[in-house]
Image 1: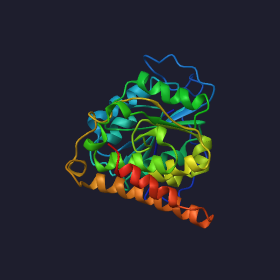
Image 2 (image 1 turned 90 degrees about the vertical axis):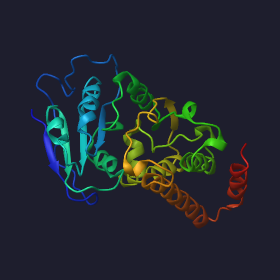
Image 3 (image 1 turned 120 degrees about the vertical axis):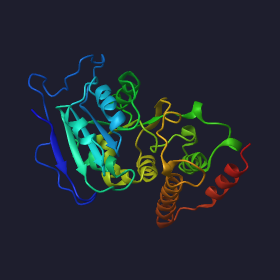
Length: 289
């Protein structure tokens, strides 16, 4: 069966299509792969790829994903003006969502999450090719019961005095959520994987603002763990909007964390819970060596 292309105009109010899974003849729902990874999952799995003019790497990303036991791959083309569409169509079992105009930075994740039907959803981006073997731990973690499997970037993060504002905001949010064990690890970074239960609990719309989704997962009792490390810091594609201090992406991520903190504290206030402990957390965070 050929791949499907879905054209969407906005990121909200989407209807789920009646049939979302694309299969190749004789594969029983699994994607064909020339060199499949040996991985047995007890639950079904899918992948969501967000891409914005990343034709140079998208093919490699999809090739690696095709080596995994996935039932479907959803590629969200976010305002692409290059030949990403033609590249994605070369992979027969891929569902293509075409957003003709550029939407929010993380909206593609929400779109893909809404369309998938699997028990496990792996999220990655079209600008970094990650070997299939490096993605296995994220699928395996959710398969064994983790709800939100994060990329563990702790070993790549410098000491506090040398950290940027984004890293410090990630650490602070986790501290406020009483999850200091997560350090600066965040749903902002790919790759990560979520259980379908987690997506239902936090709502796929929250994935448009990753820190909010992470906050909701932690407060709703989801099992959140930093499960494996993939260095996406040095391999991240450099763009005009993500380089230099105070760049657009940095401001967006900091703003997203402020939104998550605001929603969290508002919910506590509505429940009549004190916020004095968070003032102490702020002091501790500011005085970190």
